[in-house]
Image 1 (cartoon, rainbow, N blue to C red):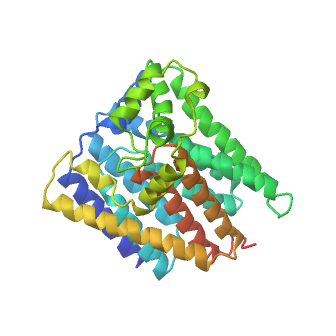
Image 2 (image 1 turned 90 degrees about the vertical axis):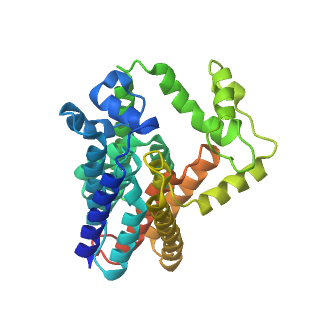
Length: 354
C-alpha cells in the first residue's frame, strides 16, 4: 500500500504542475532570483542552494519546484514507518502538499528535512542529523526559533529526566549552523532594506498593527504602512501590548485551528476554474483530516516521552504565531513532525519510548 500511495501522490504532483505552470511571484520569485544571484538574497537559507543548479542551466522554475517538492515528499515518506495507518496518513499529507508542487517554497523542503533530521536524532545518527536539521532550520526562521525554544525546555528538563547531552549538543550546533547559513547569505545581498522589512513585517502583522477581525494576524496594507513609518525606530520603542490582546489572541488561535487550504490559494494566479475548486476542497479536507489525526495521536500516545516532544513542538509553533504573522502554510512543519514522531514512537524499536 505504501508504494501505491507514493506513486499516486507523485502522479498527482506531476499532473498539478503541468496543469498549473505557476509563475513564481512574491517570496517564491525571490527564492528563484537569489538562486542565480546572491546579491538578491532576502531569505530562504539552504533552499537557495537546492535551486542553484536548476537556475544555472535555465531550467523552468515550475519544473524545478516539482522536482524539489517531490524529493521533499520522498524524504518525508522515508521518515514514516510502515503500516496501513501510516500509509493513509502519508496519502493525506501528499494530498495536502499537492497544490504546492509547481511552487518554489521553503515550507515543504524545510518540513521534510526537519522531520528526517529529528527521526535520525532519536536514532543517534548525529552527523547526518546535524546536516539535515541545519539546512531545514535555515530555510525558515520561524522553525529555528521554535527549535531554540525546544532546546531550552529539553535542557531544563534534562536535569530531571534522562536526555542524551550529545543530542542536545547536536541540536544546538544545528541551530547555530542554520542561523549561520542564513546570516552568511545576507552578507553579499544588496537587498538590505528588504531584509529589514521582512524581519519586521511578521511582527507588525501579528501583533503591533493588527486587531481582531477577518484579517487578524495577516499582512495588510495598514500593517505595511505602519511598519514603513516606524522602520527607522528601534523595535523596543514601538513594541507595546495591544489593549485588546485577549480578543486578538482568540481571533488568531481560532484562525490557526480553522485554517485549511494554502497552496491552492496561490494557484489561482495561474488559472481559476472548476479544477482549482476541486483542488481547493481536496486540500482543505486533507489538512483538516491531518489536524484531527494529529490531535488524536497526541492524546492516544500521551504517555510516551516522544509524544510529549511532539506536543512541545506544536506548542512552540502555536506560541510563536500568537506573536507573529500567521499563514496556513506555517502549519505544515508542526503537523508533519508531530504525526511522524507519534507514528514512529510505537513502530520503531530504535526510538526510545521513555
